[in-house]
Length: 147
Image (cartoon, rainbow, N blue to C red; front, side, top):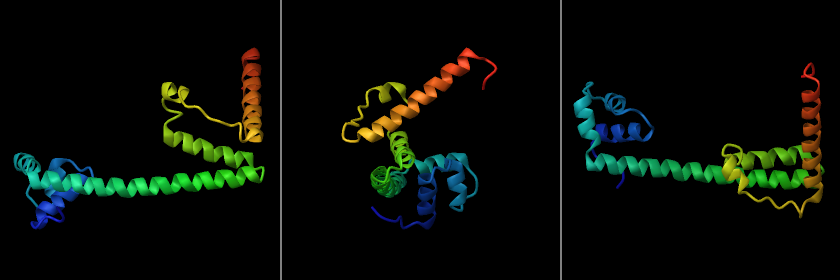
C-alpha cells in the first residue's frame, strides 16, 4: 500500500500504529479535536490498512532484534560454560527462559523439557545452587529469627 497521499491521514495512521488513542492521533495529525470525526477517520479502509502495514513493519523489526538477542545469548552461554563461568551461563539461560515465558506461567513452564545431559557440569552447578537455596530456606523456617 505504502505512504498515504494525504499527509494528515498518513500522520494519523502513524500515530495509531504507535498506540496513541484515536483522538490523540487525530490531534497530532493536525486536526481540531473532534471525537466523532476522529472515529470516522479511523474507520476509513485506507487508514486501517495503513495502520496494519505500519504495525507489521514494526513487528518485523522487533522480531529481528529479538532473534539477534537470543542468538547472542546462546553464544555467550556456550562460551561462558566452556570457560567454567557457570553463573554467567546460568544468567543467559534465565534470560532466554524469561523470553520463552517459563517464569511467568507455571503451567506452561511445567511442560518445558530441558536436556542438560550434554552439559552435566552445568546441571550439577544448577543443582548445587538449588540445593543450597533449599537448605537455606529450610533453616529459615526452623528458626523464625533468621532472615
